[in-house]
Image 1: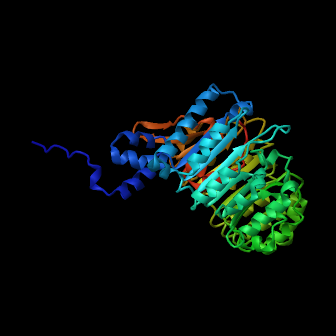
Image 2 (image 1 turned 180 degrees about the vertical axis):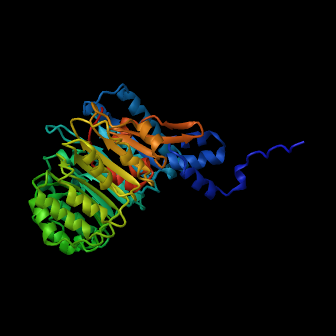
Length: 485
């Protein structure tokens, strides 16, 4: 008689090991752990509620997105979360990243008061972000002095905040926030299209904030005009810099000279880029420590692409690269940049925006050869008007043995493949994205399936926790192509 199989007992391993096991589960599976046993419930809750989004109003309604979710239902969900944080200290201890989406077209004074009370319970908070939008004729709803003072007094472990520039109206409270990662934006969530920056109203406040963070600020996100006002000691201490709404980069050589510690550079440039490319050509060896480089510019001429290629070739530590020139350079014109990409020995994450004006075997071979076999995450935005169906376009991805995340945006009228086909053919994939949809890849003995697509809110305000990888979130940051909603 065969012995009966031993019953499952989660107590045979310490909780720390189970926490590690659960952290490697697909996000779509983690909620099921809430119903296994008390230990699994507590461990899964720490993962599921480490990142919380609170919504006041509907961003979809304000942005004209079709959605059947009533605004009242959104408000009820957020109210329940706030109440749980306020009344349950254990639940509050799970929350490390709080994202507040304020898109209300009504009075939300009571909800904002509840938010202050909730913040006072978040002693483990590491990240605080406040996203809002407003009609040019209206005043945006921004965090008030009580929110910010409560953050400063309660959230002593705060490392990062992302706030509207208008928050500097409460300068003294903002100066007390202990974060080393500071992001300030105008009240449009898409800085690449926003030309209404009101930085001039906060020039002195911004300078005062930087002085208050002297010696501790290592990461900064700000409009281009603000960056040029940074004192030298701030630039010298930065390891991460994001320049949004950049119009002119005539002072870019200052960054090259003073930002010797810079490892991460992200530039969203709205005007013609000759100053930038001239600086790259003049000093291609600048910023030798770069590991992440993201550049969104208007179309570049051949001399500019040559300058960019020369700059990239010297970046032997570069792990992550994302380049887009708006209208997409033809793959033949991109040859110098592609050659430089192939020379990077440590590249793992790559984003490219490429045009296939002539669509055939030569372009197919060029696209395949453009992508190093070492990449683990790839974003490709392709512009073309027709598709040569004699080419097996899916081989661009299946030839990458370590590819775990793939994002593709292409002509919906002439699709290269569907996402299930891509996930099935590329066995290493864990997450796929197409235009505005993201899917987890689920593999089982009976085949491959895709999860339900991410919610619109999760897609629009995506975080590193959503991707399960900081580099993947970085790759998708500020990328808003092909919205399907």
